[in-house]
Amino acid sequence: MVPINTPATTGSYNYSQFATSIIDAESQPVLLHNAPQSEVDAEHEQCLIAVETALAGEKQQRSLVVSQLSSTQKSYELKAEQYQHRIQFLEEQLKNLEQQMSSLYVAFGIMQDDSKEEREQKEAWKQTQIESDAAMAKQETKREKQQFSPSGKIYGERRASSSDNSSRRGRVKQLLSPPLPSAVKAAVKPAAHPPIVQGELLLLLDKDHQPLQPNDAPSTPRQKPGRKLPLKLSRSSSRRFSSAPSFKKQYCVLHGANGLYQIRYGDTYTGPVAGVHEFITAGVSSIDHTTRSSGQQFGFEVMINASAMDAPSLCCAAETEADFMRWMAALMSVIDGSVDT
Image (cartoon, rainbow, N blue to C red; front, side, top):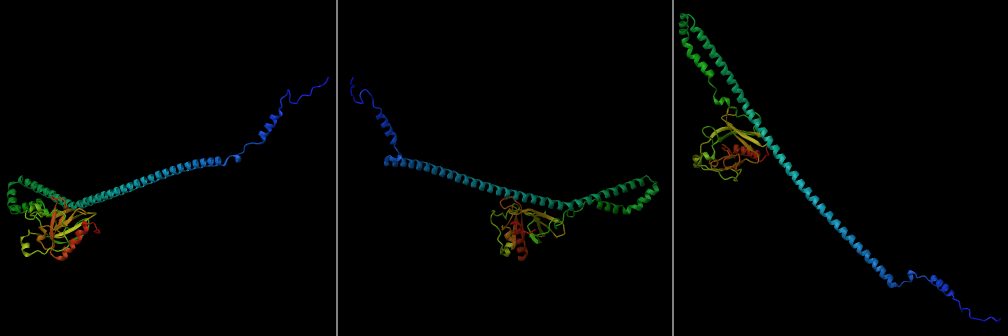
């Protein structure tokens, strides 16, 4: 039997080609550095754009935070300034209230000191009246006992005592009569505070030794507030002196403390006080130059409150230029609060 020669590939599949192709594919992998440069540049550009976008967002967020912080800081500073002004305003109010309370206490102290001497004199007068009543009761009891004694003695005693009955009545009446009003009043000399200035002044007073107000003198109306008295002398003629209202010479004392002052006046420093021009307040009262005060060469007017038309005032005049300047310096220091008490 002769064998038949056939090709090697006949009737079979050559798998070696697949093996060779697989080996070739695995032996040649696709690497990044083998990618086109345009793709790499495009990828880098996209990454750069994304980074720049993120950076711009961060910057915008940072500027927003900075703006919020700046606004919060300004708001805090504004509130702090408002609170500071409010605290300062409240402190000033407290200071004013303390000064007002201190002035009230000083006024009460002055009133108590002034009335203490009056109370003591009234108590002395009351004790004298009680003693006088007791003496009268004793004399009346003795007289009634004498009426019931024997008739001879009664008439004899009546004859003996007829001469001194009138004198006894006079003594009893003198004991019972109240003291003069001037004895009850306190002295011009202040009891609590030392005088700031004192001396004789000419005052425009009524018949009761009270300050004559502008309403009581139609010919001398009060000026409008705001015209302050300059520290200079008014040179008035002799005819102006003759037409001016009559002034009374009084011994005056200016005293007080803590922004509240008064002028006491009377005939003498140690004599009874005739009147008191009180409630001269620092920052409120003023020294004005009015029509009636200009009737005197060294005239001026002490106004309690120039803005109130019905406020009391005291029209004064000094006799000499030295007294005028001395009183002006004292009154101006009292009104502007620069007085050293």
